[in-house]
Image (cartoon, rainbow over all chains, first blue to last red):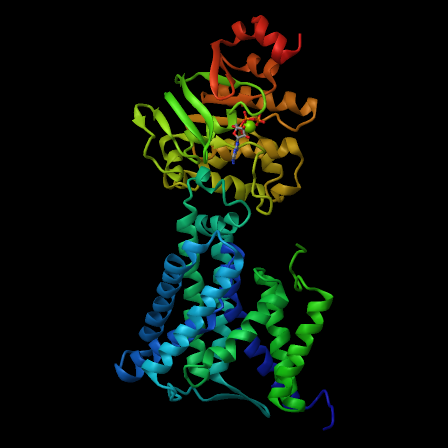
Length: 291
Length: 234
Ligand SMILES: Nc1ncnc2c1ncn2[C@@H]1O[C@H](COP(=O)(O)OP(=O)(O)OP(=O)(O)O)[C@@H](O)[C@H]1O
Ligand SMILES: [Mg+2]
């Protein structure tokens, strides 16, 4: 294939990558905030997204709930799931060996996947909502992807303002720096952890709203997005939201351009190779601090 | 204002305080002095309920603290400025102050409290966007005191505000404590810098291995032979 900087298909690909990067950035946000604040990795994060997608699908397709309401319900469902995950599963083992937290959230991953297979069956489902596409010269962009990108960016900005401006947001940033003295500030650490878990869940729920517009729903969809979300977070520096944001776009462009020059699978392979090489060069991630 | 009766506390099976009783009246400044490991920090921690009250009673303005959880103690008007300052190093000075005003009643008066603290410590205003962890020790102590004042407390618990600072800065820190007193705050201060602290407070208690050994007017303790020999080195 000829390389040409003026090739509209190349530009279409780059922009598609950018759009996908926005969604990846949003997906990484929830996982990052949980790790940054509570110091726990939710291995089952993408499975929470999967449950959210099913919730939205059934509300909309089977019960005729208007889409915006189904989205809100989906976000709330996953937020609640996040809070429950923390309260019932993480909290009792929070101060034990970190491996326990990996094992237990890994267990939840298999539980949710098995649960979805049993209850929802392995059938692929599609919401069947289409927004058409947007043409710019010879380039075409699905409006659903542009929407997902815009929503992701807005979510990132809103979250940033929340963490920066509000009392609760400041406490969420403070608690990871000194948990012990939080009660002296009148803050209950348990409450902050619960709120943060609900927030991480809510972000996963928002991710579900976007993915449900773009992909088929099936019980194993978590496997498509889980590993890449995790790698985005690690590449950016686990717990570092700005790093995750940058890493999301790097990954997305690898995948998009790989798909342009060869096949999408090659894009993934190149992204993973890049990831592994980076782990040798900068094991703490792009923005992570050494420790 | 603050009353402790037969207070006992500890860590696991280790007992740090044995039946400590003391009182701080409104408007007073009281010091607790004593050697390393005497239990001074534990005393302030048990008042803030961050460690368990294992015996005795604590009350603030007649309200029992015995069953109050740690994060609600501040609502009774007690602000604790902890040992080693414990600022949030990667938050700015102003964000640290903001955390001091986290409780609902203080949030509603956040602007007013912030103006008050900035007026009291203008240096903090100059540095308000600086990360707290990058400030000098003296500035950090100033920020820790400011953070304590943000909730609009009636009583300030200060744990060794002069520790780890250069002698010139120590002098400045005690000046800050004097300023806080002049603003009408009641203060319970723990110190190892006995000579200095006894010049700032009205009364003092001497704590040794978890028990009150002596108490009296600051001047009395300053002139006491035993205190002078053991702690002031004269
Ligand atoms: N977290 C802890 N776990 C176990 N023992 C502790 C803990 N904190 C303090 N202690 C013990 O309790 C006793 C009193 O300690 P505390 O910190 O109250 O003393 P202090 O008078 O503040 O000393 P310093 O002047 O050195 O700050 C000491 O023997 C100390 O070893
Ligand atoms: Mg101490």
